[in-house]
Length: 80
Image (tube, rainbow, N blue to C red; front, top):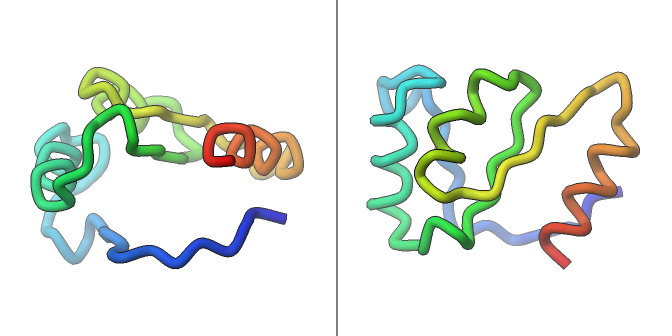
């Protein structure tokens, strides 16, 4: 189970009018959040969506829903 985290804000691409993997989406989130890039963890199930945030210095995880426990373990390792 992924730890229950209280997020200050959740960014949804459709609400921002941008579509992954557009780097402008990730730049907007980074700027608006005020969080240092190396402190941001982005999880996605498509490798092409990890390229832009990785290039911006974000931590990324490719999550395979068919191996959910492995993905959860990776997330826990990154955030705990």
